[in-house]
Length: 167
Length: 239
Image (cartoon, rainbow over all chains, first blue to last red; front, side):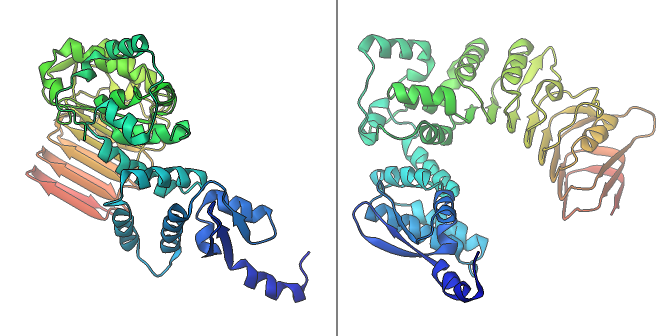
C-alpha cells in the first residue's frame, strides 16, 4: 500500500535508475529508457531500490547500449530518425566491439538492437573462410581433424574455397 | 566468445542468410554446429548470392538444398530463388515444404515444379506472413480450409491462376495488406471475362502486365494503387 504522503517521493525516485557496470562505474538512466530492455524491466518490477549491478557488461559496452536505449525512449524523435540512428550506431564499429554488444543486448534482452548488431556482424562475416570466423570470435576449433573432414565432406558443395576471403 | 549463447549464434548465422555462408560458419566449432541445427531461423538459396550454383546440375542443387534444410529445425524464413533452374522435382519441393510447415513465416520460391505442386496446399499456412511465389500454377483454392490467418504480404509473378481462385485466395487472407500481381496468366472460368477481388484489409496493390476485359477491385482500406503495363478494358475501384 502506498499512502498519499509517500507517493510524491516514490514517483520522483522512479524516474531514473542507476546502472553499474562490471568495471564499477555508474550510469544514470531514465526509467523510460531502461524499461526498453526486457531484463532491466523485470528487475525493476521486482526490486525496490533503483541500483542495478550488471556483473558481465563493461563500461564501454554499457555506455553504447544506454545511448541506444535513451535515443529510442525519446518521444521527440521520429521513427525515421531512430532508424538512421540505428544504422549509424553499428556502422564502422570494430568486429570486437560488436561481439561484446551482441552479448550485452542478449543479456539485457534488447531485441531490436541485438538483431541490428547480429545483422552487421553477419554482413562482415559474409564469404569469409571458417578460419577467419574462428580467429575473429576467438574460438578454439574443438573438432578432431577426422571430424572436421567429415563435416566438410557432408556439405562438400559449400567448401569450394573460391570466392572466400581471409581478411 | 565461446560463451555466446546458442540463440545468439543462431541469430548471427540466420543474418548471414546465404546457405553457403551459413554452412561454412557453422563448422567453426561443435557449439556453432549445434546452434545451426537448433537455432537457425533463416535460410536462403539464391542464385545471385552464390555463383557456384550456376556450375551445379539441377539434381545436385536439389540434393544440397534438401540436405541443408534437413539439418535445420524450426526454420521461420526460407527462400529458394534460382533464376537459372528450369524446374525442380515435385517430390523434393513437397518434402521441403512439409518439413518446414509448422514454423515457416516467410516463404519465397520461384522455380517451376514437375509435376505441378499445389504450393498453397503443402506450405504451412497458420504462421505464414509473407509469401512470394513465381513460375507456378495455383489451382483449386479451397477457402474453407486453406486459410492464411497471418498473411500480410502476397506476391505472385508469372503464376497461372484462374480469376475465381485468385478471388478465393484473397478472401482466405483476412489480414493481407500488400498484394503484388505481376505477369499472371489468368484463366477465366466462364465466358464473362471479369475478375473481382475483394479485401477489407488491403492497403497496397501493385499490378503489372496483366490483361483483362474487366477488373473490379473492392478494397476499403486501400492507400496505394499502382497499375503498370496493364491492358484492362474496364477497371472499377470500389471503396
